[in-house]
Image (cartoon, rainbow, N blue to C red; front, side):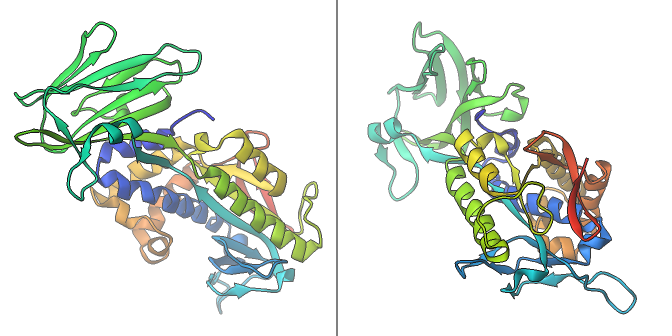
Length: 368
C-alpha cells in the first residue's frame, strides 16, 4: 500500500465541498466504465444496469452492470438498455461488472480530542490562545517530524519545529482556515498553508493531517485536527466483491473455484484509488474474481478536470449514471475521454497492461 491517493490530493482543493466531490469519485468510476462498455454496440445491446443478481445463497447482489447472451434491440436494430430488475436464472448471463472505490477517511486525531474541550455540539474543539500542541509523524525506520502549533492573541497561527522552535509557517487566521501537514513517500514532510492545496505537492503522500480552523473568538481558536486514513474499508469491500463472485459462480457453474481463462461467466471488478488497496485486499480479489481492473488516479482526475471545464463550479452534480443516460452533454464528455484512450482505460491487475472491455464471438474479452 502506497499511502494516500492522488485523487485525494485533487479533491482536497475543494475544502468543504471536497466531501461532495469525494463522494462523486465512485460515480465517476461508474460513468467511465459505462462509457467504456457502451462504445461497443454488441456489449451495449446486452447490457442490464444495476439489477439484483441472485447467487447460490439466494442473496440478491446489486451489481453495476450485467452482460447477457442475447441482445435487446429496437425496431431499427438499435441497442435497448435494460435497467434494474432481478436475475435469478443465470444461464443467460455471460458476465458482470462491479465498481468499487474506497477513499480517504478523515477522523479526529485522538491526542487532539483528549487535549481540548468540544465546542458545543459541533465537530470542532476549543484551543486556547498561546497554548501550543503537537502534530507529529513517526514513520517506521524514518526521520521523525514534530511540529508545535500555536494560536496567538494577535490572530496568527504559528507552526514551529519542536526540536529547535524554528518557525516553519506563520499566517493570519481567516474564517475556515486550513493547514495540511504531510508525510511523503521518502519520509520528508511539508506544511501546506491556507492559500495552497495538495495539488502543488508533487510527491506521493504516505500520510497527512488536516487542521481546520473555523474561527477565532475571545478565548482562542475553534478548530479540528483530522487524521487522514487511506481506505480503511478496503478489506470489507474486497470481501463483498469476492463473495458476489463466489456466490454467482457457485450457482451457475456449481463450483466456487475460479477457472483459468474463464469465458462462460466472467466476473469483473473495477477499482480506483488503488493505492488504498493493501496486499491482503488485493490477494482476496485476485483469489476470487476472474478479472480485476484499475482506473488510475490520473484518469479520474482528468475526468473531473474535463467535467469542471465543461460544466463549471457545480460540475459534480452532473456526475451520475442517470445523467449519463439523460444528458447528452454528460454522455459526450465521458465518451470524449474514453475515446481518447480507445477504450483502454483499465489497467489489468494481473499484468499491468491497459485494456478495453469488448465482445467477441459470444464472449466478454479484454483487449490490449
